[in-house]
Structures are given as structure tokens and as C-alpha cells.
Image 1 (spheres, rainbow, N blue to C red):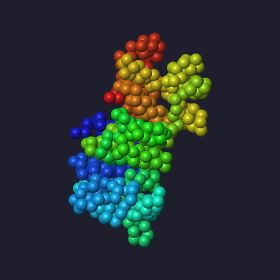
Image 2 (cartoon, one colour):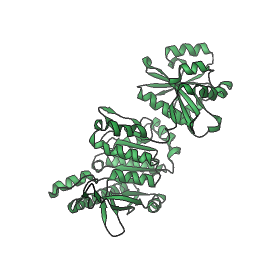
Image 3 (cartoon, rainbow, N blue to C red):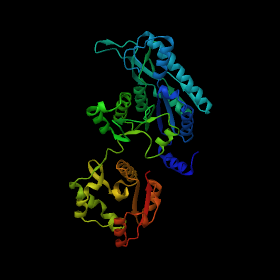
Image 4 (cartoon, helix red, strand yellow):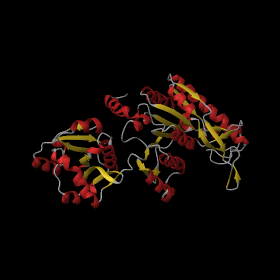
Length: 427
């Protein structure tokens, strides 16, 4: 049952995503799962919030099952290898069946949907001396057609099949198709619904990765990633490099998992992000002067505590800066109290020239992600003038000095500023 707090959390995200497009890529195995109908209801909720949805699906699970039923040995399952005549027929039958199930399910949620020939493809050709026959590559996306559907509140359903101008059909990899569709539609999110909970490196589930971190894993730690997850991670990197800000990889079998991933900071799977956080980096000693200069206006207005350059330099490893054209335009500090599993968001300041551009919110989100990575259970901050901002934009709640760690409470009492304490549970 949806709680009031859940609804408030969702509504906080709605303005950010309204009239934007999500591309949702659903593995064939997810269509067969008991949670499939719930996913379609979640998609209906997204549409009710004026979020456009294009749905790409795979059919690998169905191809395997159909091959067993017909005693046909497929030349390839996922659309990346050779597709012979028999495998093409399996793919056509399986993909058309999955498309039908999705259209049928969307009809049950009162959503209009349509399958189109929006994927223009050409043969993959001869690769490393091997003719790939009916395997194809996306040549272009008919975005005019897809936008025409989206503009009329029709959900495009896109199977892993492409067509050329001469009456030929080519089999495609659905993960790669999703990237091309997301890039063509300038989607703000690409969401892979699969049968694993996210990307694991060894035993560790990776919650958030910058595109650079994901690339590094593929280059240097590839063998530590489960084989079934490699395609998703590779395509997530391609999407992020191609301009898709957020790529999510989640278990589509988890009830309400899609909504939890989209409408909460923590999510349930793996997020690969680009662009939005690339301007944020850990501060270095050379940034001390810039941080000191940056916060002076806030100090003079009594918004921020006075800090000397020496104090900033001593704690510089706790600071992060947001750069514009390689110059610090904003800063924030994150002080950890590991014994209490708490962290303080402090000294957040944005240069007046860059105000009202969402930079403060990005710094808060980034700081929260860093705190979660360190196992912090509660984030807190102190404010004399901006507490409404932290409540409305950061999801903080009003607290009291009793919420502070012991050492921090002593400094709070000595300061005499009587700042408002704000807290946010991260568990």
C-alpha cells in the first residue's frame, strides 16, 4: 500500500521529469514474470504524471523456450552473433509474441500503444571473417514517427527487429536498440529491467557509477562482473557517452522496484550517470583560496560560519567543488562522525552568478550518495536562513540539537548561533 510519505517523495520528482522521455528496456524473461502486470501499472503511473515512455523489449527467454519446443538449435540467442535462417524465424515468432503480450497488457491499463517499423537497420555483415547473415545493426531511428506517437499519448513498443528499404528484416540486440532509441529521443533516463538486482563486482552490488568508473571496471575488472551483466554495463556506458544523463539497471521482478528506482535517491539497483555529476570533484589544497573567497558573501550575511583559510585547508579533503569552465562555482563539505554513523552537510555555497541553476541540489544529491557509500545512516545540516530550501529541495526534516553527535553538539552550544538542525534518515 502506498504511504503518504511515498507519495510526497514521488511528487518531489515530478517537476523534474514532466514532459521528458524515459526509455524502458525490458528483458523477455521479465515479461514472463509474475511482476509484469505490476510493471505495466507503474508505466501507467508514469504516463499519468506526463512522463513519456518508449518501451523496448527483448526476446531471448522466449527464443530459448521456442527452440526447445521445436527442436531447433539457435545459432545465437542475444542478437549479437550469427543469425541463420532458422534462428531468424525463431526470433520473429518470439519477438512478435512478446510484443503482443505487452500491447495486450498495456490495453488492460487503459494505455494506448503501438508497434512500428521505426528501426531502420542494415546487415552487420562479415565480422572477423564470419558472415552474420540476418543479424543487423541500427542505421537510424525514425524519430518523427516515435515523437508522433508520444505526442498523442501512445506508448511506442519496440521489438529487437529492424527493417531496411528492400523488404528485409534483421535481428538486433535489444540492449543496443534501447541505447539508440534513448539517444534519438533525447531521453533523460534509460532503464534496463532485467533479472539481476544490478551490476555486481564480485560480491558487491554497485549502487552508483560515473561513466568513467564504469569504463574503468570494463577495462580493468571485467572478469569480476557477472557475464550476464556485461552487456548492460557496456550499453550503459555507450548511452551515457551519447548524452543520456541516467542509465538504471534494476531487477524487474521486484514489486514497485521501477518506482523506487525513479522516485528515490537510493534506488534499488545500479545507476550509471553522466554529465550532471561530472563537474563535481573532491577539493584539493590548491582550491583553498577559491573556497575561502566563495563563502565570504555567505559569511557576511551570517548564512555561513566564519572559516579561516587555515581551517579550510586542514579539512580540505572533506570539501567538494562544482566547477564551471574548470573554475570552482560552488562548494560543499561533508564531515563524517563514524561512531554515530552520521555525517554533516556543511558550508554549501553557490556563487551568485550561478544561482537558480540547480547546482545546490546537485551538490546535496552528490553528498548524499557519498554518505550512503560510507554507510552513513543519518545526514544532518545546520542553517540559520536556508532551512526551507533544505526541506523542500533536499528532503530534510526539522530536528533539534539533541540529534547532533556529542562532539558536534558541544561546538553548537559554544557558537551561540542557535542554527536550525535539519536531519535526513538514509536507511
